[in-house]
Amino acid sequence: MTTPSFTRRTAIVDAHAHLYDGGANRYGIFARKDPGFEAFVGDYSALPRTYLLDDYLRATSSRKVDGLIWHEFISEDPIKEVTWAQQLAAASEVPIALVGLVDFRDMSLSGYDPKRT
Image: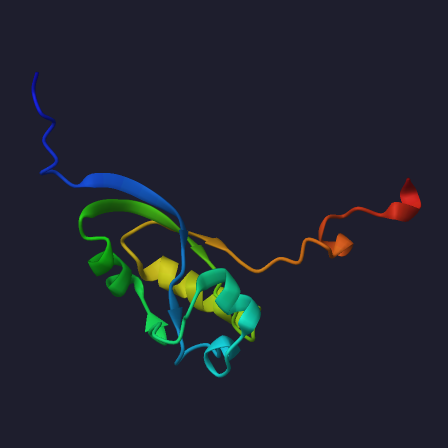
């Protein structure tokens, strides 16, 4: 029986990554302690205020990242944040898809009209 070799880096597409820049976007979550967010993610006080693609690639250097799906990071201006992320994706050699903040309770986003049923 041969033992598999793990010397080569495993290729991945990360389906949920957060890249953010506190200098380019305002993140109120860093200005105050939010008990709901903390219950979800734990103590986030030590998180860096900026976490860019180079930071992510350093943290995942044991893997070959073939792509990632960026998710918004609860900025105070989600449109501005997605625009920033689009610029980041356009300049990246790593393919990046984007997922912005969507309020799924907002029926106007679905095209559903309850008056037509």
